[in-house]
View (cartoon, rainbow, N blue to C red):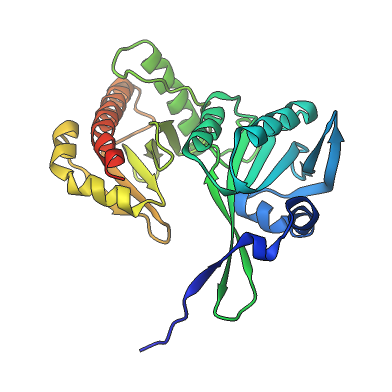
Length: 311
């Protein structure tokens, strides 16, 4: 039997005594670790840049797009003061990528960052990052950036990207037409407000950082699907599966319960055939998808309420 060591958490204050004098200089030198975690590349890294009466911990520029980045560090629990500073810095520097790094997160501040991502223009991206440090027995300490909140569509795909294929453009057309159809019908009682992208999926917020509604298309398999995707929460997935009968009663269709291979994500979905070039069936496709996600929405809301009361 293999003898395995235990991964141990290390107090951040044992590594960085002072946020401004220790952590921020370390982050400036190791910022590639953070950027790799959220999938961007940065340049023009500057520390403690002055704005009015305040200093931004770190500013940078995204290499590919030139978008401005600001980073606010907080080696303790999130609070209103730092949230206010974050928004002030973002407005003063006209930042597009806003990153808040903390050691502990309160529910109200997590919901605030989620709300910003749901209601801001797609060009604005908020990230809430939890910094942790681990070691194995007497090994060197290893930092870990855990992305707690990020935009639903990340990384973004330019709508007019020259790399967009015919298939991607078909996906874009479908999402745009589906949104238009939904706006003129009463099939769903929530909004498809996110900007359409030339990609095979479209996500809809359902009031939980752990899950969202996901609609998907596959031109290769002539298939469309809709349901719930759950990120990094085995507990939620198992709770929903324990209430499988109730869930299936709401949805009234054949449901698949899937673990995404290689990821800590889960899918609960239904599928339907889809032929993107068949104009005669378009309306039926829109109706099927909208009716399905409304059923999933209702089922999730009902069961999630019970889940939250027990956790």
